[in-house]
Image (tube, rainbow, N blue to C red; front, top):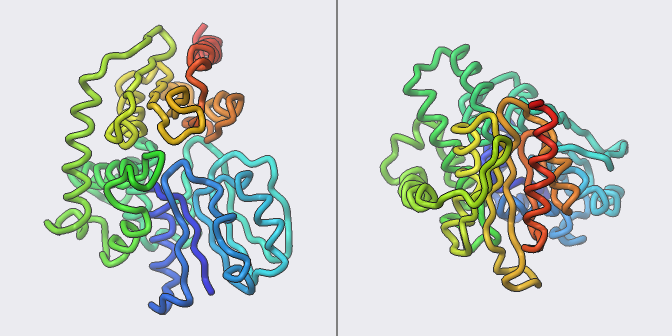
Length: 333
């Protein structure tokens, strides 16, 4: 059994897609398993049963190691091998003869780019879509220019990355337009991202329509708080707000590069009914650091330039925003 476990966002999907383009598998459903979920669903290894893990080859992409470390330690003796590729901060990384890791945590890297390096750029266009989807516009554009891509082609890859990433945001899979597993499997049938974009019946068209509608709603929402260092936007409790939260946070970060961006949505699935928020945090584009630390203080996580909190008590929102403001003010004095 080969088990591919991956984040349901653009980076996770495009990282695995590149990997499988170079390492294809027979199309027998009983020997290959996909395990994924919404973007914030990180502890995915524990969803795999012990029977499936026995002698299996595990491949994990774009999932924080710390969220899966305990489950991995519990099963690693019974699996055949593990490849773990990720770009999130990790405190619980361990070594084992069966464990092969490629983990880098810099603010200018994503999992799709790590895979791209490993496979020596054989499917670079998909890696560019991953980087654009992970809000690494400057890095992606520089690589695209080196590839000889036109500004139009760069914009197309950027849009595809945004749309696939947009589809991953939600508290549950029911919030999404497509399940990440279905979206991955659809994209696998295309030779290049441009083929996806050119196909009038592809998932691209469905996601483009949904994104356009959701972003128009978000644009009508006024910030709840705005200072020289941080902006807060509350998108409410409807599924469209949960879907667009990450993409809108990225958009606001590009528009206001000197500010940290906080986007909040109501979390209807929390045990604290009506008293819980899901948070997306973007560090200022001029200082891509600290987002993971700030979110970790509230039981969240992430990476240097972007982080989140899945279940923030509503009463703690003001304190969260104050800490974000204080943190980035020290870098602008």
